[in-house]
Amino acid sequence: MSAADHWNDHYQQGKGFRPVTEPEVGLLAEHLSPGTGRRALDLGCGTGEYAAALHDLGFTTTGVDFSHAAVATAQARHHDRDGLDFRLLDVDRGGLDLLPAAEFDLITCRLFLAFVDLVPTLAGTRRLLAPGGRLLVTTPLAERQQAGRESIGLRPADLDLLRSFSWTAVAEYPLDDLLCLLLTAHTTLDRTTR
Ligand SMILES: C[S@@+](CC[C@H](N)C(=O)[O-])C[C@H]1O[C@@H](n2cnc3c(N)ncnc32)[C@H](O)[C@@H]1O
Image 1 (cartoon, rainbow, N blue to C red):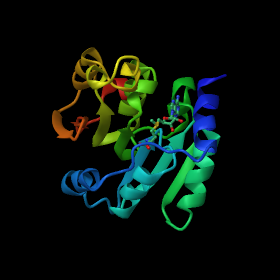
Image 2 (image 1 turned 45 degrees about the vertical axis):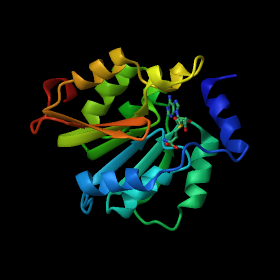
Image 3 (image 1 turned 30 degrees about the vertical axis):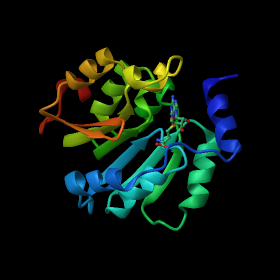
Image 4 (image 1 turned 135 degrees about the horizontal axis):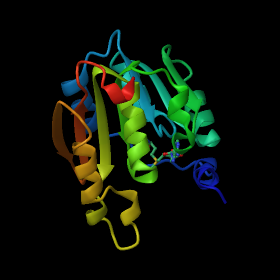
């Protein structure tokens, strides 16, 4: 069974993940609002609730996921929101290369980064961010998971890598048992992202 099949099974059974909470939306509103006139990309969007929250802050938002069941559910649930769209895309198979460079003011990864190849995903994300754009990572921590479930969270070495990936500012906000990292790209295009 492929990784995408595994996620498809989950969504086809009508399951989701941890619901988006009020404190999470509050954090978005406090640090990233208003989104009017700006573009957001939600990686590994699942059934689209976080992307919908970005849309509701004014961002023109694209959610991407490699599970066709997730994308179909997201499209059905949020079809009434103009400026919110969902696409099938595999981040580990060159999917980020299909998106326009330096286009997004905000890229979000909620409960996502632990499931993909970190270095190419971060490099791809930096290429897609507009000058001064921001990456918001919301993640469980591997060290806080029960034995056998560590792989759903980022490890200390992953967090160090994330923090060191050529940002002008790094802010961190604990959110219940999750960690949110808000990372700001340089205001000029990085040579490696052109
Ligand atoms: C734990 S779920 C989180 C979903 C959503 N972000 C949320 O917070 O509810 C991880 C998501 O990442 C997606 N995913 C995993 N690997 C992926 C990849 N290589 N490319 C695109 N999406 C991927 C899965 O299909 C799943 O929807």
